[in-house]
Length: 410
Image (cartoon, rainbow, N blue to C red):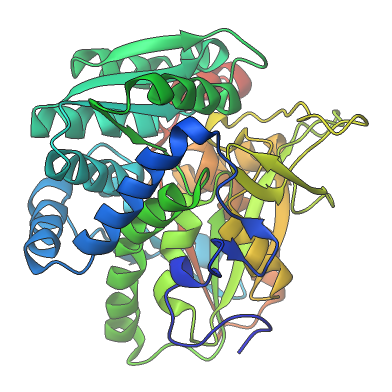
């Protein structure tokens, strides 16, 4: 077992009494005004995750609303084209709405109903978290506000239109970089003043500890399905198995890896390296960033010389975040997961190749993961297996892809 990882304890519960992972990451660095709503939500979730009725409701909606299980397929053409390792994909983009964010959104709406709240708010970057929350809110009869950076509103038009169609209000965030980091900040500020009537859904495994736990607990559905699918395909967990996932906030990777924590499977997280001709990126783990506090949690975070949150750049709005989930900081330090990055250009090339050869069309987020799979597969033996989490559909990125490549492959 990797250094610092406790066997047979869920990843989300690996923290100490101060909610710190590995003694350094996470915690609840929050203003006094948020202490009570955070404590109340922590107590409620601790109860609900053990309640049979709540688990039944979760499983019911995962199956009948989200469409679990999502497909697990071998990418025969990509495998033949590259040679080397066998390449598979867990096609989470087939979930209702087109991305993994629907699991977290659904669970948060269930919690909001249990808490007697009529309103729900959330943040979004790529638009998927916002789209899914607006969908789930409509399903559960909740009024919804989505906080989204003005820059992301422009570059993720399809998801913005979907959010509005679902009846949710989009609150443009014009401060700072006008991207995900600012959307999260504004969402939290709003919750401070409205927590009596409003439930907050943080869109990834970031923020105060309870939001990390709810999100990762929700997306763990991905690996619960995958564990069964892998055993059905191979009869066992392959001796040399690599699970590759893009990493921004880190929600899809946490869910993709969760059930394999106590196995020999290798975890590879791929951050956003940004444009090749730029010094800017969104890859704090890959580029040796220092520990800082962002959105109520200690984590590796991109900072400037003065120690303030630094600027980021990525073609992928969903990965364009200066921090990283404390769960991933913990997994890196414990040497349970390895992290690397892919450039904007590499992600575009990966999208182009995968969409051309296979009947899937990954968004620019998982295209970063496919770029790493494409890089390493030819160097491996045919007995080795790579599984990529294709966690989002490219439809939201069609305008960016057309602009960069001249055409869009669906």
